[in-house]
Image (cartoon, rainbow, N blue to C red):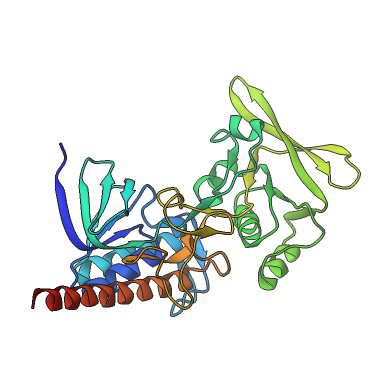
Length: 321
């Protein structure tokens, strides 16, 4: 039987939203507990150069998250390496059951579980995951030094991955199903100027091909979206960069969601459909999905949690009179 711990504010998730909430909740003397989750630091731990974080012309994603965690700890936030497997929001105080066996009982909850990479769902993609197919260039790019690589996608994620992979690869082919990219213009400009990158328009991945013994990628089959014509492209690595989906599994059947699982919050607020439960960062943001906006929402969530708890205390005091 695991232990039971009580906290005024439980923060679930450890990206910019979670750590910022930890800083602000600590400064409000709420003594928050932050449970980091499966991927401490979130998506920025798999990002290299971050060039749009205010105050840093350029900062490494993992370094930024180390600094944010240290800041939260310094303010008094208790940061725990564990992850929540089940969340009971049916009544207050709320109960969060962790993988370690610990049950956290919380007067307010801030959800900052972020988002994770999407996959295409192809059988061959799944077969070669970890053996030539990846969704993280910063994790796996080093293994493809001097090799030809394919990147699938057309947004910021795909362009950033393609540019980063030119540090290792002899050639990067970016495959996109349309004839224009959705990425920021500054990123597109860098991509088109890079001599190592070739862009293949109007194509989508049909199959990853490779060897079984040992398991490894040898190329891809891609299909023209209009003509249906199939062509093969030799490569040793395939990076799927088609965006991210919100990590809302804990609350998808309890809280109101939209746009494929993003948690709904009230206008200009982090309040969810359950009083005392707040959501911040990529879990709720289907529009901007930036580190700086996530941090801002983490701040909002902590301030709103502080206000909510103060109101509950006032109501309890009035009821006791």
